[in-house]
Image (tube, rainbow, N blue to C red; front, top):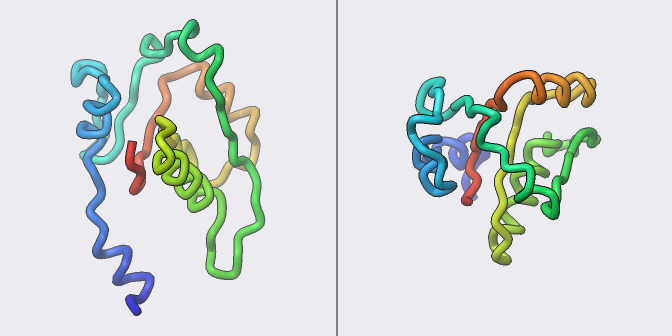
Length: 121
């Protein structure tokens, strides 16, 4: 059986430009922060399309002894939903969400920084 570090090192992270292309986001709208992170303008949000969509916020969880917490739960949930045909994306804004309201205010003030980690869209 592979160790955690061997598993982590064997994974190839997809560039955010590839993920954006699959989401029909123009390269002109991407403000790249390296290969794996990008900032998107709020103009991409179409309020009429998101009215009937679902948003799942994973804001607090007690990590398991193995260290599985919010990030692992969020990515696992997205991968499971994708597996059954639900079009899903994960936004991991900060590794620790101590104050959800300040995060939501920040999202409204500026474009969202998306970090795609091992998530198939």
